[in-house]
Length: 497
Image 1 (tube, helix red, strand yellow):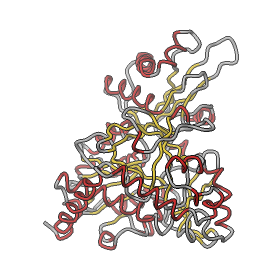
Image 2 (cartoon, one colour; image 1 turned 135 degrees about the vertical axis):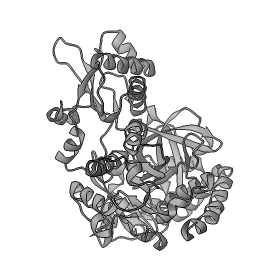
Image 3 (cartoon, helix red, strand yellow; image 1 turned 30 degrees about the horizontal axis):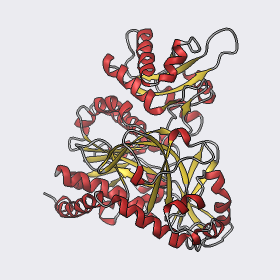
Image 4 (tube, rainbow, N blue to C red; image 1 turned 45 degrees about the vertical axis):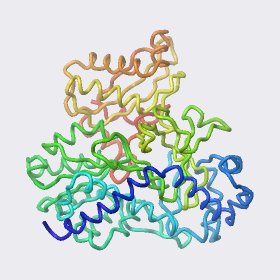
């Protein structure tokens, strides 16, 4: 056993015991974090405007702090950009995480001296929990690749600014630097296709043991390796044993990824965002991701159906229930207050608190009152694909609203790895699965308001070409599963089979 894996084992055991202990103190930890946030926040510009100095309980906190989105928080971000201190949190942020919003343009999310450890330690803890539970520490001896954004940072109001993955790259521990690929120079390449080719050049003859990234971009990496060598990934990297992923639901990509690898490898799912690292898979045996309850973030949960109401119900961790769909709201030591991150989650366990990500609050279809969500379309597609032994590369769904005598319908754009023998029969299965999953959609079909869905096959690499055409190929970008309009659908028209 080499020195890195040898030293990692006792450290992993130590951290794992602490995390397991924290499972039993989650509610108390959350209450302590709220007290800390209020104590610091009352001396900020935000705290003064919202009366945090008079807040002493969670009920009072809910009254004082509204649920907001980035547009509503923007005036405070602008104050920070103007050079002001103590605006959302004490002092000034040490970074801005730059991210693209669907409605807000570029967002600048503050990362503070207090909050940076949430991003760094949570990723580390996910790996250490895996080591402790499985006993597999040998991957620490090989090369690890993190398919991420460029680490090059610009300055906004003298604050280093860039993609979160690029910021985190600057904080990778020194002892892992010798294991990390690609090189810094390659990571700085902005054009994804150029970068991908350089990554393959640098890794194709290395002993890769861990590969991390968003599933569709990992698939592109595997495809390029296969194209160059004609081999499965297991034959190129015989010691590859761990895949770390997040950003999108892994299940639609799983079959194709494992087929490319040539064997099943262990996976570690994570739930990171520019606003914080919220949860990670702590067990290979248990369903769901362990909520990060003691890392500077106080979580709130709004029933998903109420998120667009003026005064929605807001619950702390103590009051959540298994199986309910919630919009995730955060308050953090990055200076985010009542912030709606746009993701919906569902708890699969409350002892400990484990959840799954079910979709996006803005990614749904309700053009006809059906309110179809990401979890439902993913379930419907995966069930049909498994029954037909079909592999899916990518997909998205949009409504078609008929303006003449014809009925409206949902249109599914799917890029198949292997197409069904009978597309019409496959579409019927999809439609039946969704009808069973969503009673409102079923009622609309039964009532002849909607026609059964239309399936539109997308040509090979069509989604990649689409993402390239809008300047969002690679990095942390992903295709929305659902849209309530035809913007994406109309652009995809040029990429159909």
